[in-house]
Amino acid sequence: MLVFGIETSCDETAAAVVQDGRRVLSDVVVSQIDVHKEFGGVVPELASRKHIEAISVVMEEALGEAGIGLRQIDGIGVTRGPGLIGSLLVGIGAAKGMSLALGAPVCGVNHLHGHLFAAFLERDDLDFPFVGLVVSGGHTSLFHVRSNWEIQLLGKTRDDAAGEAFDKVAKLLGLGYPGGRVIEDQARGVDPGSIRFPRALMEGDELDFSFSGLKTAVLREVRKRFDVSETPDIPGSFHPIRLNVSHEVAREDIRIIAAAFQDAVTDVLVEKGFRAAEKYGSDILVVCGGVASNGSLRAKAMEEARRRGIEPVFPSVRLCTDNAAMIAARADSMLEAGITDSLDFDAKSRW
Ligand code: KG4
Ligand code: ZN
Image 1 (spheres, helix red, strand yellow):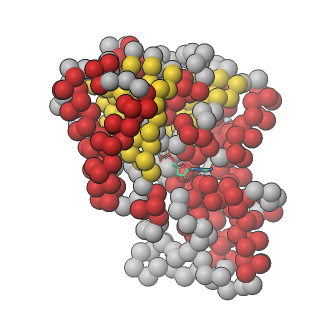
Image 2: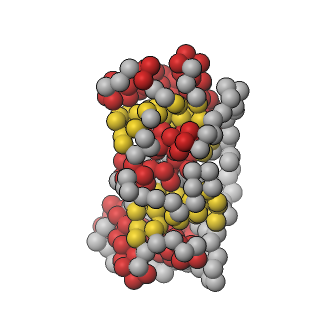
């Protein structure tokens, strides 16, 4: 079965063709990072406009790269949510138009389920059931994936997502947007042990997450070391640090804070991920979503995996960050299970 995937939930316009839910024939992603960078985060109105400019070109490219004609498409998958409504509507509109023109079924895909199904593109021998941890800019959620139609939420963040924490801390440290990669770069080779930031909700068999306390602890540390001024009109919001000490000392402090922060986040993610896998008797832990491209998280998970005898599956970095191949893979499984949507489905900002 050939499934066409479309993803426009945030700041990537993406289209892909996937065969039988396991083989990527094409995977086109146009990122808007450069557009949003100067604002320090995604501007929803700008994102929608950029999607509408890019969508048809990206779709045509995905067809061309796959070397197939439109008429060969058996089904269409599009991200229905969670995400920015204006952005989602661009992809959904395109998918509905395509479905109408081809008479092919369309599935509105949960973006988080899409991230989970990226694992099948990485490992075509992967089978149900498995436990999956989705760590992205907007979500930190644990799932028990039992079949094409049974995906149970086991735990999620009570406040900030892990990626959101990376982005906020990077902003605070004056490192720019998006934060994950820059924090990882700053932390490389630095001993993370000189500051011990809190690891929240680690007790018992708790599977929820919380990262807002960690963010506050980082802020306290930054204030201790640097001159940070509070934004007068937004209580609790802070300007990025202004360096008032010698640059070399400041740079070293930034690296130390970045490393200690990354260490705290990755400790929690690894512990909860494997805890859930053990609790649900899964010998596989899938770790996916943008934050799963973090090298330190991958290394820690590999180490813990050896200790616990559970195999970690990390999709490649390209499949971890937002893409449409994962949406097509999830749609394939929905079509297999007979789950399709009628053409009047709407976008969901939360799911
Ligand atoms: O899954 P994704 O591409 O988009 C969402 O669905 O949110 O994830 C984006 C998030 C951002 O918060 C970004 O800072 C984070 O993933 N990220 C990373 C790394 N690369 C991207 N976080 C930690 N380390 C990285 N190397
Ligand atoms: Zn995502």
